[in-house]
Image (cartoon, rainbow, N blue to C red; front, top):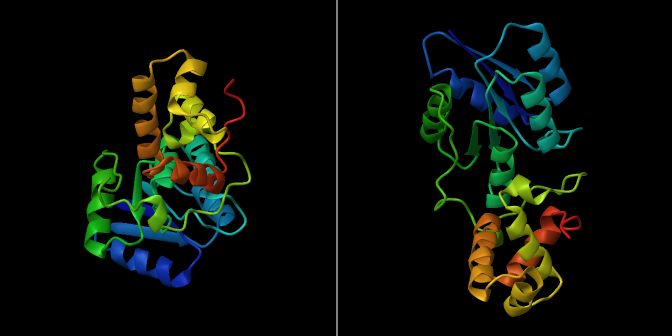
Length: 220
């Protein structure tokens, strides 16, 4: 028997997910909660669940903090985020916080069930990179109360340093001199930064830093 928990504050979405997930198996129990606190109480009081489906935009708690709490308090239960905020930095941050999957709410019911089955089989699911919207196409999740660390969205320390110097207005040549790198190496790091942020230019990268509140202050 499968036992799933849906944590979603919008009643229509929550009820739809519960109904849809009921199609996974003849013996599936889907519990649901509309807020994070009651979800934690349920997890603490009942037998272990096979999967948690978590919305990021819950009232009363930062979604990333909630995900981190779940992974720490119930490490044996996989968590899949189901969210309308499916921009690349958000997906990267969710996966780096230990989620077993990220399912955009734009998915069809069939695609969502396929993703859930993949996670239940022990796989890690993330949306196809080609299908993930770029920064210009989405409204990102409201900024977290805590600063976003570069590693949370998939940036290495060196890539974060390159981004920090971009923010300061340095050219590739100046960044290379500052970091003791070849200019070609800086360009490679810059390309990786753009990919992680889902952007295509320096200007868009600077916008992303501001939008997501990326903390670049402790790199030098």
